[in-house]
Structures are given as C-alpha cells and as structure tokens.
Length: 109
Image (cartoon, rainbow, N blue to C red; front, side):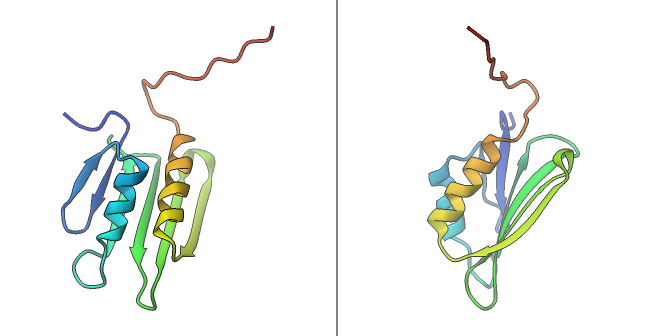
C-alpha cells in the first residue's frame, strides 16, 4: 500500500510514507556529498503536480526546490539549518492539495 498523501525518497533508496517533520529532519540529516545527495518529496500518484527536493551543495548547505504546477510556483533557495528546512517543507506540503483529503469547511455564523 502506498502513502496516503505523499512519500519521501532519498537517493540511497530510503522511503518514508507520509513523513512527519521529524522524519524529514532525519532523512535530510542522512544526506552526504558522495552517495546520498538528495531527498524528493511528492504525492504518491502518477504524474504528480507538485514536488519538493533537498540536495547537498558542494560548498556546504542545501538547495531546496519547491515546485507546484497547479499554482504556477517554482522556488529555489539555499539553507544551512536542517531544522528550518524540515519545518518549512512540512508547512509548505500541508498547503498542497491531495485527492480524497477532507477540505476545510468555513461557515458564516
């Protein structure tokens, strides 16, 4: 059975279904500049409309890419704090759409 919403895959073959902020932190912490240089997070579906990736930079730190074609978003940043990256990705992914996920209902009183 696949992820309910999204999965995170690293270059070395590790996969976590619906990773938490802590799981993303651990996956990013495990990155190195030889055989495990990136992590990609995307919906567990064919032809996903969004993805985020984190890659080790040669000069140190990380390149973070966020792309969502449904919202015409494409952002590339660099960062050094794994904690900040994991938190920011978790917040960004929470704002993405997922088929079958209940939507928030707003009512006027």
